[in-house]
Image 1 (spheres, rainbow, N blue to C red):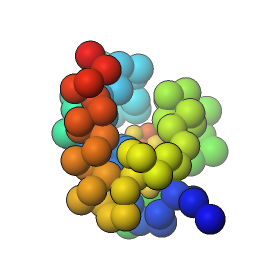
Image 2 (image 1 turned 60 degrees about the vertical axis):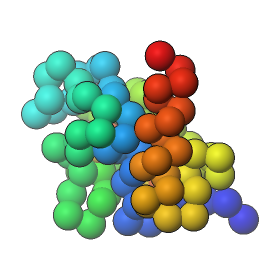
Image 3 (image 1 turned 60 degrees about the horizontal axis):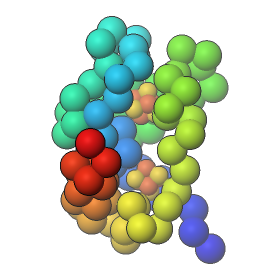
Length: 84
Ligand code: SF4
Ligand code: SF4
């Protein structure tokens, strides 16, 4: 079964996010760790209405998530470049 890897957080680091995030009012550039990602690589805004909608839409995708965080960072970065 394919599910999100607990403690990964690559999709909160690799992609750029254009919507405002509490603490990052202009969103975040690609490759920058979101300030809401805690030390355990979990979102501090889970279940918080201030969590950007785009975050709730990013679902586990084996083609982007790979087998490790390192792979996910590479794959999402490549995808980000390909879609801009
Ligand atoms: S990159 Fe994939 S596995 Fe990692 S946290 Fe995001 S959805 Fe989960
Ligand atoms: S707000 Fe939460 S889900 Fe969205 S990028 Fe930041 S840590 Fe990840």
